[in-house]
Image 1 (spheres, helix red, strand yellow):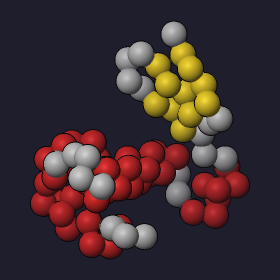
Image 2 (cartoon, rainbow, N blue to C red; image 1 turned 120 degrees about the vertical axis):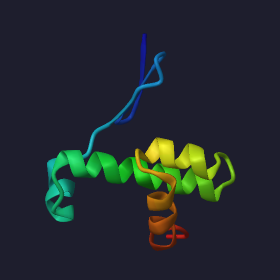
Image 3 (cartoon, one colour; image 1 turned 90 degrees about the horizontal axis):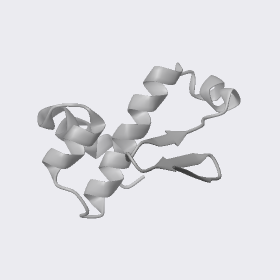
Length: 79
């Protein structure tokens, strides 16, 4: 029960897979685990900016406590 669109795979259990090429990870100088956390943070920030989710929901999505999300918000918002 998977639907693939480009590099994103959607499944009915709400798991999303994003493939980041090694060349991009090399440019970012980031291991895959760190890139995954950063992607989740960026998605959370954008969804919060757009008013689609609350601060609490964004922090849960990002995998951090609300104070940490709010601390990082100014550096990541409106980019």
